[in-house]
Length: 289
Ligand code: MN
Image (cartoon, rainbow, N blue to C red; front, side):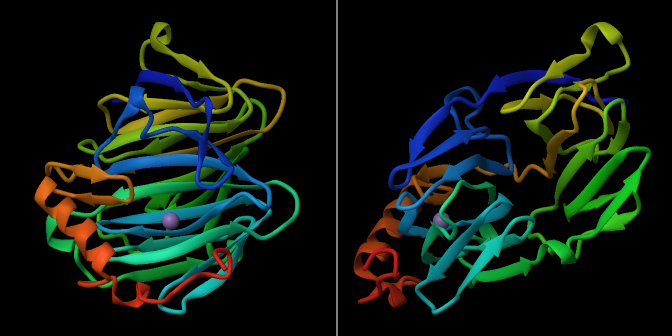
């Protein structure tokens, strides 16, 4: 059964970090969460704006660059630059403190997705999976090109290992191109449109939904989604889907746990630089200096 669009929300630009602007998809008030996803931001940042030193605990942050580059630096000495098409899948686990700053003078554009971790994995050791653009598998069929950031599409599998089963697919379509993508029945799924004009076609034409850029389309029940590029230009969108974790969520900014008590512990651990935040002692990123 084809999934239809059950909710369509425009991501209006808002302030975030230090002088940065983001279009928030999941995580805005009309789309608070979509289990296992906590947030998706389309960020557009020029220096000196950015995201200087801040902590995370209890989930994963996934950064995918669309234009320009970003430099990251963490409190364990892990650092690097991710450029257009590159991916950083960071498992914050029990604790990471890092900075994320633009690395070119112009617009630095990308997506940051927050994927929740189940209770049993919230306090695991932090880990990184980094893929260059050339290492992300890709396939083209009938005018649609997919980059498989996570999961599987057109018979191609991503090498990224995710704690929570997730599909993260970047689609580019020529005008008139149509794609049908399988999405596991029990998973939550949504599209975020980056450019062009697409139509999500369900079994009943009257329920088709068209969308321009910067909109989130939450998909209803079904085992696949059918998308057509309706415009005269290329269309670009991501399909993100995941198996719901089904646990209570307690969130305070960059700390995402199951209970308020665990949030209080996270704040205490961060303030006292303990239980995973030891390396925060005396550490400042280059961006913060
Ligand atoms: Mn961060």
